[in-house]
Length: 168
Ligand SMILES: [Cu+2]
Image (cartoon, rainbow, N blue to C red; front, side, top):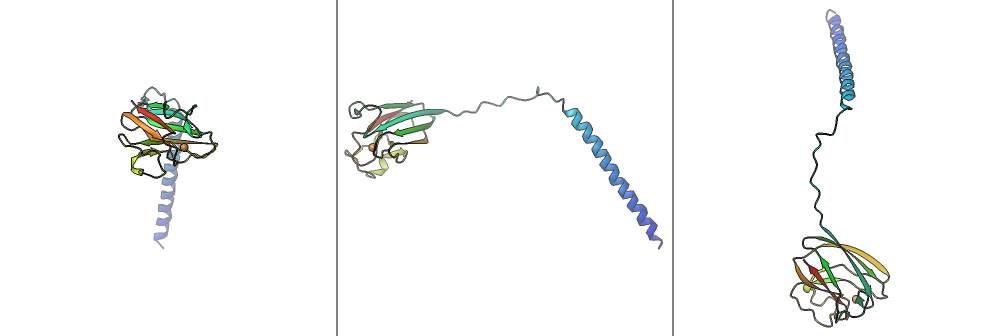
């Protein structure tokens, strides 16, 4: 029975220690929060501006040519983008047929007329099919500087349907 008062004594000591820590914590946090409200932004350092070199391209499609006139064969439309840019291309198909916009690898020869899927390895990038009366947006990284042929890969649309992409 002699240990009992000891335990009570220790418990009360422990409780008062916890209470003291709690009270000190409240006081310290009050001081801390009231004094930190006056912090100024003079030490904020400016971050370097993000480098995102975006280029926008708008491509208009009719049956079956790019741009405003059915003269792609003699006067192909030219789209120019800066080197090392992230190109956001928006393609609007105002025709009644499906079309697309595909970049041909530099130096590759395109069979004329081109049949869909033919010589598939000649293509560098394609936006996929754009159906009639619809619009699609795609992104690609500009290939190395130079001039590229752009074709519609729907069977028989090339060579009537073509343009040029210039990266410089
Ligand atoms: Cu087409």
